[in-house]
Length: 131
Ligand SMILES: [Ca+2]
Ligand SMILES: [Ca+2]
Image (cartoon, rainbow, N blue to C red; front, side):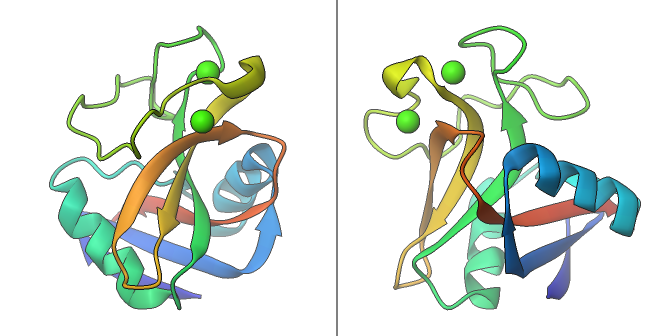
């Protein structure tokens, strides 16, 4: 696990175990006094930093979700997601009516794009909290 500071927050890249979105969120709250990551500004730079900390081809949960209301994407604190998020083409697509959680996929070259994905999959994750 590696942490980095970005835009007034400290983020922990947890790539040593894979959990469902809810279990990952609980892990961040219980073991790290934070929540799943909510990058507030310059998401591209945030993604670059995450990419620096994983080997690539890595799926990571972030805090975004549309669990409460389909199509209304919010962060864990209820703030609405910025429209400028780098979604992979065609997403969010709520595939088979089941994609409600935000996953960041880091490609082998370290770049990354966002997917809406089924919250019940187990992935690595990124926690965040104030510095
Ligand atoms: Ca959805
Ligand atoms: Ca999707």
